[in-house]
Figure (cartoon, rainbow, N blue to C red):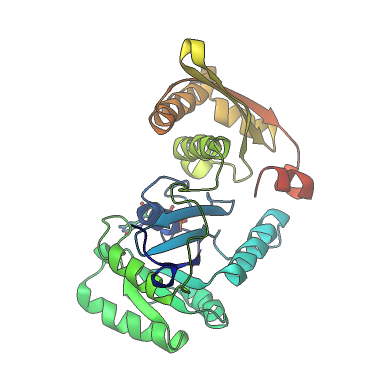
Length: 299
Ligand code: GDP
């Protein structure tokens, strides 16, 4: 039997915070499915990602937002605008910050922005596995001072510690009402976009700090070939300069080959199918300054 709608809660949950605090990891924990690129480098999650968690008592529609940070470059301005737009849309806002000896300056700036929002707020202090328990009390006090009235939940997205407590807190703040999305829908991202995320993640892993920030992945072909039990994926890796193209391809094409292999292994698990993956690197000068292209790449 389904529960009556008045016992059910549903709504949009904005996940905010500066880059690298662990928003994507937390989102994956909350949704139980890999939806966002997780890398040790900041700024890899460029597009708005929606993950959905449906429990017997509530539905959480999670909006992951790129880190809010000041930059005059168009690409980054776009990210900032989008993050702000997402924040306005949410029924509940979860501001993710990182546990440390004291509050990071950039986390403070983020909390200043959070305070100004009208929605019920939760500050999730992530990465508690990295600090001593005693350090959390002054940190929580600082958060409360910056965002009066907020709920505070310490978590470790990596280990999963206390994540269910965060879920309960979110639920308690959601408006009552029926589910807004079909229950079996874990994300509204198309499979193509998931594939793009995975390929981009492998590029970031392979390149580390050398990675050109202006790299995008666009899936051009995504077709199931049932007679061969094969999923055929062709993707363009778009960079801004010839030199970036060379870096990604690597000596004798070795780098690109490794990126492709790693991506294929993960995509095969993700789509539970054998995959034929084709990657092509293409130079598009100044695409990060072209609003049309930015829109097209879902940034
Ligand atoms: P985002 O930029 O905010 O989406 O951050 P990510 O989810 O990509 O995480 C950034 C880095 O922090 C990655 O290397 C994660 O493995 C790491 N990380 C995330 N959550 C935790 C946590 O709870 N504990 C620890 N120790 N590391 C974490």
